[in-house]
Image 1 (cartoon, rainbow, N blue to C red):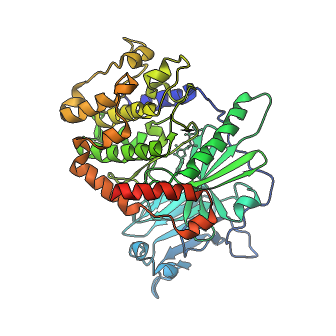
Image 2 (image 1 turned 120 degrees about the horizontal axis):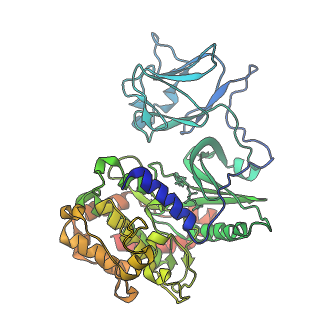
Image 3 (image 1 turned 60 degrees about the vertical axis):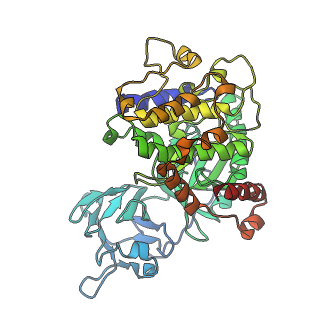
Length: 480
Ligand SMILES: Nc1ncnc2c1ncn2[C@@H]1O[C@H](COP(=O)(O)OP(=O)(O)OP(=O)(O)O)[C@@H](O)[C@H]1O
C-alpha cells in the first residue's frame, strides 16, 4: 500500500461517507478583527510574532533584523525570554541567542535564522544551528522540541472573527487542517494563553444546498455529544460560538497529527507498528469506546483519520475526535459512516436496527491496520466487491501477520465477527487476558496521569459538565 495511494483512497472514502458535506472554506465574517497584544507603534509592522504561550508577548516586527533569546551583555537581543524563567520546561531549551528574523532588504522575503544548539523549529521541523528558512504567514515557531510552540508568525490579520469569539480567544492564521465544512485554526484562550484548536465551520443555509442543512444539524449534534464527554482519549470541547452563518467550535488542541499518518509512516515499512506499540494504542482506543458506550453514545465513524495523536512521540496519547455522526442511543437505523470501516449490519442497509457494536467493528478495522499496515477491507482488492468482503467478514492474513501473536490475531478476528451478537462489547474486550499485558498497563498509567477531575469551578462555568462529572466519577472508579 503506497502512502500516496492510501491517502488518495481515503479522501475518496471521505467523499463516500453517506452524509457528505461541502469542501468550502470558511469565509470570515465582516466584524471587528481580534486585537491581540500588539505593542502600539507609529511605524507600520511588516509582520508579527503572536505569543502562543503564557508569559510570551505578541511582538510587532518593524526592523529588518530582530533577535530573540535569553540575551546577555555580549549578546543583546531585541526580545528576551526572561518572563519565562519560571517555565523551566521551556527555559532550559532557550539559548542566549535563539533565533533571528531577517527581512531581505531587496526581495522583502522574511527568514528565520536559527542560532541555537537546542534548535528552533518551524512547523514542527527542526531548522538547526546555522540554518535559515523562509517564513510564511501562519508558520509555527517552537523551541527545542515540536511541542514547545512559542510563536505564530503572521504577516496579515488573516481573519475577522466575531466579538463573541475574540473576547475570549485569539485566532491565529496557523491552519491545523481542513475539514469538510471549514478549517481548523490554532488559537489560544486569552485568559490563560492555553492553546486551543478552533474549528471554523460555514453553516450557511442555502435552499440550493440541502447538505448544508444536514451539516447544521451535525454541528449541533456534535457539540451536544462532545459536551457530555470527558475522557483522556477523547478530544474535549471548551466552547461553541455560533454567529449568523458561522460556527466556531473551540476544542482541545491535539498537536501530533492524525493517527492515520502514524500507522502508514514509512518507518514501519507497511508492516504495522508492532505488537507492543499496537497494544499500547489498542488499550487507549478500547477504553475510549468503553467510556462512550457506557454513557450511551455510539461514535459511528471510527477510523484512523478521526483519531488524533497528542504529539510526535512514538508512544503518544490517542484522542478520538469528529463526533459529527455520533448518536445518543443504543438502537440506530441510519446508514452512515465510511464504507471500508462500516460494519456488515450497516452495509446490509436493510433499515434494520443496529447497536453500538458497529463501533467495535470499526475499531477492529483500525487495529487490523495498526498491527499489519494494510486495511482489512478495500476496493483495491479486486477479487471481491468491498460489500462482499465486509458481509462475509473475509480477512486476508498476509506475511505481515507472522510478526503478530496468535492472541492478537484472535482478538482482532473476534472484533470483526460478522454477527453482531457474537461480536464482543467493549466491556468484554477490556476484561480479556490480552488487555492485562504490560503495554496495556503502561497505557492505563499514562491515561491516569492526564486524567483531570472536574472541579467545582468547571461545574459553575458550564452546567453541561455535571453530566460529564457523573461519567467521570464512574470512570475514576473504574480506573482505580
Ligand atoms: N483538536 C485538534 N487539534 C489539532 N488539529 C486538529 C484538531 N481537530 C482537527 N485537527 C486537524 O484538522 C483536520 C481537519 O479536522 P476536521 O475534524 O474538521 O476534519 P474532517 O474530519 O475531515 O472534517 P469533517 O468533520 O467535515 O468530517 C484534521 O485532519 C487535523 O489535522
